[in-house]
Image (cartoon, rainbow, N blue to C red; front, top):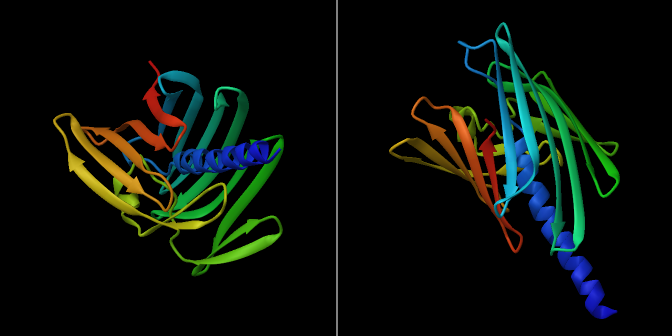
Length: 216
């Protein structure tokens, strides 16, 4: 019985780590002024096995932006524990900062809803009947726009937490990579020479390597 309790506890820990990385991925932001709309359709793999998809749609509204993302993953943890994950979010950006956002995440048959809005010089985030205040110009994990990643804190769209992060940029022959390190996990983003986000890789401890690859 004690062994089973340990296994359940370990499974919960790995699920939390996996979700934190996924949620970070969900928070794509605005779009270049030269494009009215842009889409990213990623196939998602865990240790080379396809487990689902993650789609992003960004629409320019004059100087503002609307960003919609949706993810669906299904895989087995430790080979025999089925995991299903769905995440949907909508963000509105103004002057390079979040104006508001809403997200809903379903895992384990439970829905989690989080929302936020900028009022004056304060950004309010609500979850489970509680509200947290943050300073103005909050940003989420803006993978497509490396400039936004220079913030010392980035918002987790599922938990509503403002996470301290570090960023490292490295030039490559095909473009450049950016490594983001929140408190848990590490994300490696790949960009082509035009600065377009084209791939992502993340190591999920004791679970495997998760990769995002643009669908053809």
